[in-house]
Image (cartoon, rainbow, N blue to C red):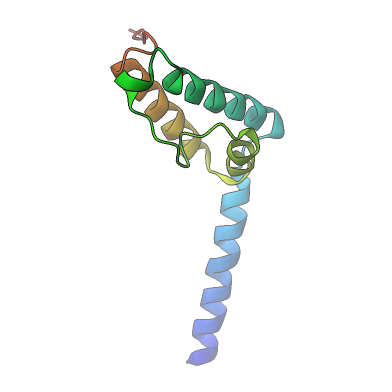
Length: 103
């Protein structure tokens, strides 16, 4: 019984590793993602917007390009979209950017 559990655990682990890497973004996309993330951090924390946006430095909001880039390389596409949308929504709500609907 124990050997069956070990095999199943190994298969699941390999599947997760393969699945995670299959959805990783390209280096080019991650360069753009990281540059945008840093730019959005700068927008939200500049003198004009920092009071209304109230952004605190954390994983999502930080000026470190390499951190955003390296995270992007390992993240599934859905996470990239989610993080981008979260930053855009926050900056729109605090008036740092104007967001236009696609409709």
